[in-house]
Amino acid sequence: MESRSSRSWPRTLAHRAITQSVIATDPDAWVNESSWRKAAPVASEVRRTVVELLSGTPEAESLLGRAAVSAGAFRATAERLSLRLPDCGELSTRLLGQVRQAEALGHGRMWLGERYAPRAAEVSAADLSPRRPAGPAPGGGTDAELAVIVPVGAGSRAEGRQRNFVAALLAAHRQTLERGRYRIVVVEQGPEPRCAKLLRPLADDYVFAPNRGPFNKSWALNIGAVRTPGQPYLCLLDGDSLLEPHHLELFLSRLRTGDSAFLPFREVVFLDRPSGDTAVATLMPGAETGGLDWSELRGFSLLEVKGFCLCVSRSRFLACGGYDERYRGWGDEDNEFHRRLVETGPVTRLPGRLVHLWHERPQMTGQDQRRPNAHLIGTPRPAPPVRIGDIDKYRPEPDVSAEGEELHAQHGQ
Image (cartoon, rainbow, N blue to C red; front, side, top):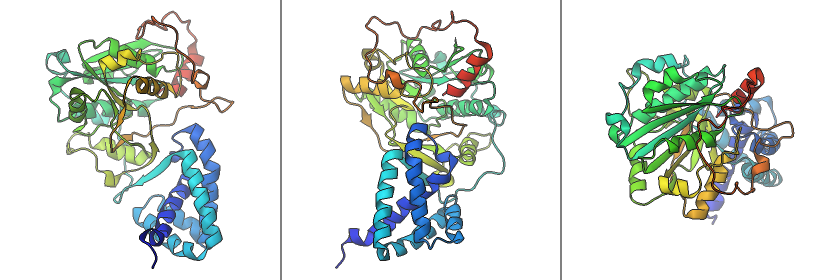
């Protein structure tokens, strides 16, 4: 008699193969350029093998196209493929090897909700404006235990990013945790304060840090930490996130009971553009405030992300020397800080997932296909003492006009 695992392998492999087939051709799956460049050729091989197994007809491509946007079509296509696999030993073996390689290189998954359907209209920052909270935390948040630090930067053509920033802050207000127990700190950087009018009313502390060069997330987080000495706990939150209503209460509870550093997710789901609008629409006037309905969303996941939303005690943050401000442009600063945290004690990863709101992806690699900070990986930090969070760090830089502006827009987080 066949074992349960031997009976179920065709369905498991078919599901994984259809996922990689969708990833191969969907631009929204390109959430990390360096891993995507490695995984994309193999994912394309998976898709070709799947088409061959599905008889290699034009209908097979049509099936995969529908499977990319419909949970029902995905299941039906996967079922059709699973029925073919047991009778195609050589092709099935080839497919399994390709899928394993694509998954190892890309670290990606697909999320496709049962009720996913694109919204008819996009949601803008202006659509969210009437829902803005009345003001800051009681007492200005100065007696709060938790500082929620959100670094932002928006180029001149980044209206969608500004919408995301507003949504992230509104979600930080939409919490079960009493408002007086946490403080929202926004640190904007760039050539000029483009987001101040939108974000200042949503923050207990809005800071503008002039920077005409590439975005420096490390510096922004350090500025936020330096400016909140009264808060013993920190939540370092990317500006394209969308917290669920229970999150801050959970974060603070764990921090207060001794979990001094943790990542409150196992995967980050990078929503496609329609799903980003669906998620943000939960914050519009008249919407229910119960949080996200995952059955309506679609996106592509990254596993083992080291940043995006990190909760840490202030003492642990400072013991690591804060973030390394040598990292400018896209990537690797979170990985470096995570390594520093691990050297000082445990870093817990909680179950669950967080959403990343859609935006055009920034430039992640240079002409040599290397990330901007690749040369810093594994190098020692400057010898202490090192001053962190100096808001005037880049003020003396000369005006680089359009070139610096473009660099900031490309590398902004």
